[in-house]
Length: 383
Image (cartoon, rainbow, N blue to C red; front, side, top):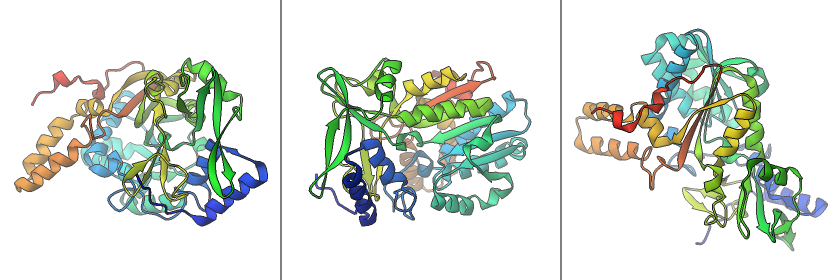
C-alpha cells in the first residue's frame, strides 16, 4: 500500500543530524523524538489528532456513554472509600472528552460524589492542556493540573485511556537464540533499520523477569516505560484503584509465534500502516500493551489485580445494554435511533470494533476484594 508522506522536515533533519553525530539510535529513542520532541513531536504540536478530522478515534470520542459508564464504577469506588474527599487522576487525557463525560455524569447522577472530588489532569502536551482547559471550563472548580509527584499518597483512582500504547518502545528480534535490538541509522539520506546488540542490559532482564518474549525469528516490542509507569502510579496511590484501558494482550498472546512482526502500527488520517519512517512527527505510533507486565509490576509494588478483561465485558457489566435501550427510547426519529445503535456498537463489537482488542485492567490498594460493578456477568443482564 502506498503511504502518504507528510513529514515535519525540521524534526527529520534533527533526527538525521543526531544519527550522523552519534551513530544509529535505538528505535525507542527515534519513537520518542517523533512523538514527544518538545518543539516538533506529534503530540506536542498543534494538530487535530482525534475524531473525523484527525488521525484516529478513541472510545471516549465515539460517544459520551463510554465516560458515563466509567463514572458508575468511580461512584462505587467513592462509596468503598467511605464517601469522603477523593481524587480522580487522569494521565494523558488528550482533548478532555473522557474527563468531560465523567464529570457531567457525576454532577447529574451522583452530586455528593461530584462535590467531594478533585479531578487532576497530568498532561505533557501544552496544546492538549489548553484544549482541556477550554473543554472542561464548566467544571473548573473541580479541576487541577499537576505533575505525577504531586499525587503522592492520593486516595481515589488513577485513570488512563489509551495512554500506555503511545509510550516509546524498544523493537527487538530473536536471532540465533539471542535478543537483538532494532536501531535507526542512515544509508546515505535514507533512514534504515540496523540490527545490533541491545542498547541496555535491561531488555534481556525484562524478558527474564516476564518469562516471555519473541520466539526465534520473530520481532516484538518491549515497553520498559510502561513498567516504570505502573511502578510509579502504584507508589503514588495511597488507597484506591488504578484503572487502565488500552488495546493489548497478555504476554503469552502478545509474543505468540504467529505474531511474527510485532504490533507496532502508525495512524495517519484514519489509515493504519506499519512504516514508522514516513510522516515523521505527523503520525501517531503505537504498540499493543503487555498487560501481564502491568499486572506483575503492579503486584510487586503493592497493587492487587481486581479485574481484567475485554472492554465489552467491562461496559456491559456497568450497564451498557440498559443505557443503550434508554437512549434509543428517547429517539423519535428511526434513522437517528439506528445511527445511535451503530455508533455505540463500535464500543463493544469484538471484530472491527473496540470491544475485544481493548482491555481493561482494574487494580486496587487498600480496598480489599470488593465485587465491582464492572464484574457483573453478561448472563445477569436483564432486558
